[in-house]
Length: 224
Ligand SMILES: *Cc1c(COP(=O)(O)O)cnc(C)c1O
Image (tube, rainbow, N blue to C red; front, side, top):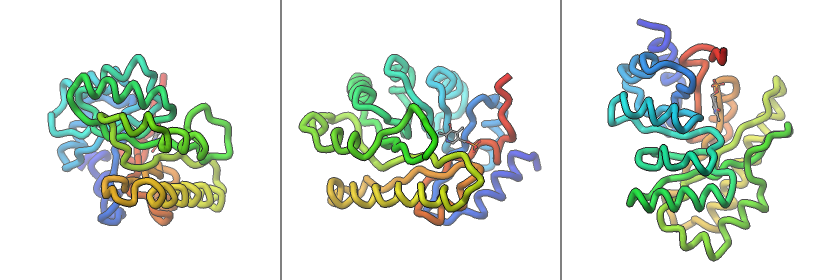
């Protein structure tokens, strides 16, 4: 068995049934994705729109492509025809653009709101007030071609496990609050995308339903 296959089997054997695995294949060649595909893996995550579009064109049709990285509005058009989940909605303007492009494609695109939970400075992710501004606006109700199915967040890159745990907990709390206040009648609001190679075990303990694993499956990335 190749390393990719071994890594995947190991990680999958550690996952509870309710946790989905997104194999993060950004920067990796199509041959690596094909190998993972042969073990039965169907969900792949990319962070660049055109890279994802190119891979989607040449790889099997039953792959679910997840966009996990910051997406510029002018790039939405490249992935709107096929993307199955957008994890990284970090602004009102992006959400409206996704709705518009989804409408052109006559489809509904599932989205997660990306929440800024880390202590460290990061340009991306909404805070609680910004989430409320979006979800409780009149305009939101008119967006018929997007569906908010949950939240995504990234913990601080640190060795301090208590801090990582606190950050994931804060995301789970916000999830529960939004679920109760806004989506209590909607079964589709159910995903909590948190956990990467370094912290997915903590994330699962804190309620993650979707982990995004790159280097633990495909090896370290080389950005050249
Ligand atoms: C790259 C990336 C991952 C995967 O990171 P690894 O540490 O390689 O598992 C997960 N989530 C996001 C948003 C990423 O950009």
